[in-house]
Length: 390
Image (tube, rainbow, N blue to C red; front, side, top):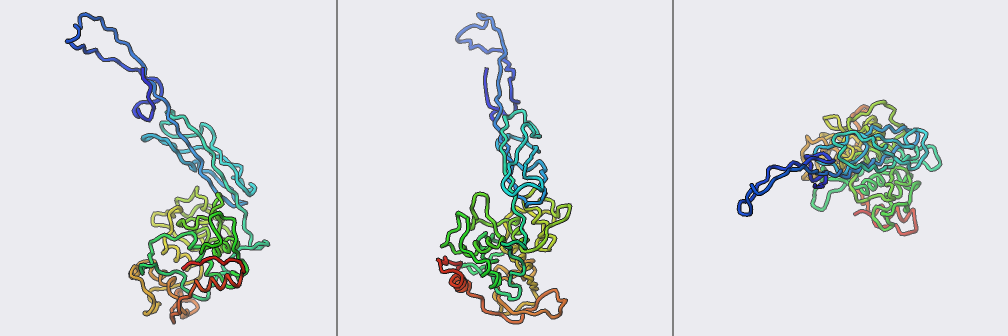
C-alpha cells in the first residue's frame, strides 16, 4: 500500500485507489518459475487531500452606502491544475447602509465554495475586513477641500521634466507626487486654512520633502492612507485611487443604478469611479473597462488634473517658444496638449465666452516651487518645515 499527496498525483482523485499487480517476471538465473505458486493481491493507494486557503478580500465603503457582495471578492492559494473556485458566500455586518463607521469582518460561510475539483482539498476560510468610512460633509466643522479651494485662474506649470531631459508621459506617478501637485494648486487662502505638518501616518516624517503636502491635503479630507496606518508615499498610485482623490473635491455622490465600466462592480472605489466618470473627469478603455488597479500614468494624471482645474489646452492654440520635450513631440497623441499645459506657465484667454479651448497669449517663468514651499512653511509654522521636492 502507498500514500501520496493529491498535488503530486494530479491525475488521481483524493481517497483510496486500487493498485493492480501485473504478472510477475522471475529472473531465470535465481529460480525456476515452476518452483513457485504465485498469488496476486491488490493493494491501496491513498491520495491525501491538499490544503486550500480561500481569503476574503478587504473592502471599503462610505457610511450610508449598501455594500453588495457578488461572491467573487476572494483570493485562493493552493489550487492544482484546472481546479477552480468560482464563488463563495460572503457576509459582513458592515454591508448595510446603517452600519457604523469602523472595521467589520467579512466572513466566508463554511462549505460555501463552488467550483471544480474541490472535493480534493481541505479548505480553510480566512475572513477579510470591510472598512466603513465617514461620509464627508462639506458643511461640518472640520470641512473638506473643494474645487473653490483650487487655483483655477493662474495657469502655472506643475510638472517638470526629469534629469534626462524627458517628461515621461507613460511613466508612473507616486502618491507623494500627487499630493504635492494638489498642494501647490491650492489657493493661498485654502493652503493657509488647512495647513498642517503632522499626520498619523507612520511613514511620513517631518523631514520628508512631501510632509507639508501630505499633511495639509489629509487635513483637508482629500487624502487618506491605509488601514495599516501608512500612506505609502513612494508607491505608484492606481487609477482607482487617483479617481477617488479627484472626486473628493466635488459635491454630490453617484446616484446611478448601474456601473459605468464593466470591471468595477466589486471594486472598493466603484462609487468614486462612477462619480468621476459622471463628472467627465475620467474615461475608460475601448472595451468598456476602467482597469482600476492599474497604475495611472503621468499623462493620464495631468489630463484629469487639467480638467479639475478647468484648463482647456489645444495643440493649435499654444506658443512656438514654449518648453518642448523630446518624448512629447507627437501632436496627434491624445495627451500632447495636456502635457504642454502642465509643463509651461502661461497667460491665456478665451476668444469667446463659448470657446471650447483656451488660447495662450504669453509664456511666464516657471515658478520656483522649492522657494515658495519654504516661504509657506516659514509663514505657517515656526517648527521644522522639512525639505521640499526639488
